[in-house]
Length: 233
Length: 289
Image (cartoon, rainbow over all chains, first blue to last red; front, side, top):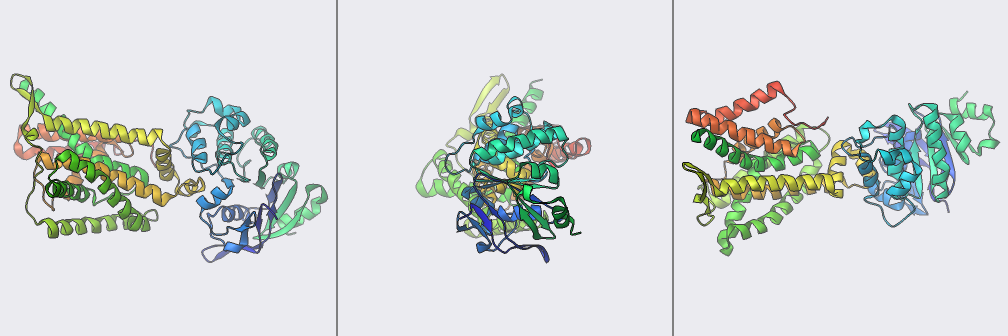
């Protein structure tokens, strides 16, 4: 039984259909990359998994339990957390308060707490009392990931963590992912930067126009196959 | 000289009452970005509730207030959960219309139950007690208690806002409701708690309102205007700013009345308009969007 799985998942924005029968699975302790062009449905998939966009109950299962369409709060309590696209930190809260609110509604214990998040991202410890808006983009992304970790998730979803950041900063962020994975958490990264994604992933799904067009291990996929799945030509 | 000091003191003390009116309004605006047009009527409702409790059980105002505070919290929680949560968030107009309707409903409900007669809360002689500061200069005990209550309430609300998980949730929901949900925050319960807290503060305001002056079911909207002006003068989103706004409004009214009794309300409104012209976001606005 997969930790988190979808079966025939569809999603809509009003009349516009964004996902068409998507089947994906995520297992504990693996890193999965979801790649695809702009508008392929990657972020929509994550929003559907976290309850921000409605889904059919049976279309999403967490450890066998049907959770599609549950509220974000209920899905978080099951153990699925999201570091959203664009960071979306709370500007009225300090760095530490942003982290704390991630853990305010967690259920049960786990490896992640303020100190372990600061150990993962030491730069945040020095700036713990600063307003979140005063941080650099890379540090804000660290807070977004740390905030999601504070709920002690079993599945961590990261949406476009490299977007708008300098390559050196992206390298630091990606260096943290293996440490997160060793805590027993499944890590799912949505990326437009294929090279970065393939370097860390155990498995890859490629989305195009709301459908999974390719899946496999990075080492088994040819450049041509990825290009075809990514762009459709 | 004594007259000038007396006027300033009375103004500051009156500001305490306005700050109490305004604290709940400021809280609701800070969390939900909603102007509760029924806020004044809710304070009047609390005043009638305290009046009814004191009369029915033959208890003093302190005991009646202790009963009214949780009762008003429950009323606020229920009104928000059942009614206002349906219209919060999409557009600013529906909450305005619903709270306007709630204002009319409350006024007419109070009229039906308590009639249009003016009432007053009796504090057992405390309302006429005063402390002499100098020959010819004295301050009333009730106005002093009002200002002290305003400071305690605003200090307490600030502690809740900046020192508790509930306060973090208030600010997070205000910043970004969708992402707050992702943190496990139930926005509907946060809004309901905020409204409950605002009306609990309203009960404290009500007891001082009822002791200082007569009240009847129709006076809510006028209290709302003072509260609204205090919030705007102080700056949206700042609770200490609301206290400062209330004091400035109280000072303006008292000084205006000293110059000419007819100028009392006018002077307050003029200061409000002047602040709007010079600092449209208020004197102590926090960085709210």
